[in-house]
Length: 287
Image (cartoon, rainbow, N blue to C red; front, side, top):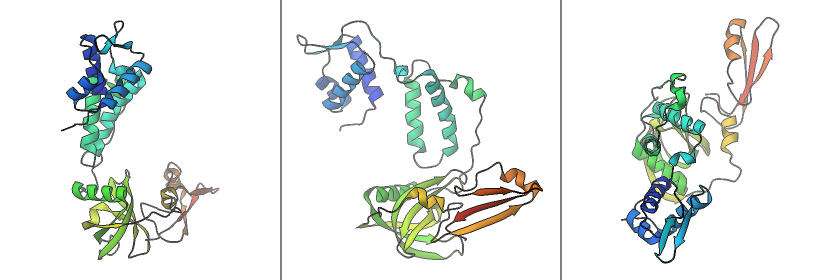
């Protein structure tokens, strides 16, 4: 069975074959790695054109070779700051443990780190920075997540049983999945979908979806829909129909913290002579 091999792994194998003067060709390498010959051809062209590898084809031996000594260095893909950033990223990623794709992304970074000749240590950055590991608001059923992801990719409707946070009402709905959205501040995954029951786009917390099933029925995302505009009208992942202006006045004591954060894309702040302030922003939901 043909397997997927990352380009870095393929090029390391090509380099070993050439340094050992085995004169491999695209077909022999492809058979060994169980990938297509076209993939190997692209790898060789990348090594030659982008990494300046002195690769040439020997027609007599019907294979490739180095015309002069050369060694493939995975670190050539990254400069020092990028290597440091990669090491820091592996630490930052820890805060997403238990969320979808954590295992896959973590393994990918580990493979890249181990492929480097000198393991990245963050250039001392890990001694400078520290990161919180927030506890996820709720655990996500990865099977359900995969169904919603596929539904969003294929534009297929999904039937869900949903428990509302406002009144605990349980309803059956048919939704058109537009986007899966992760709220970093709350550690929660949300589904942005057009709800046939409400005849509008709504935000659903994945942990409140009790059951779901694909319908196989296709849907179309309107050309007028913009995820950016949708979130501009949302507050704390809640959005609705229409818009309302929110006006809040804060005392001088409270105002010092309000100034330090950006609460909403549409916000404006009016300063007052006594040190207090008024925060105004527009949202699409009041519940």
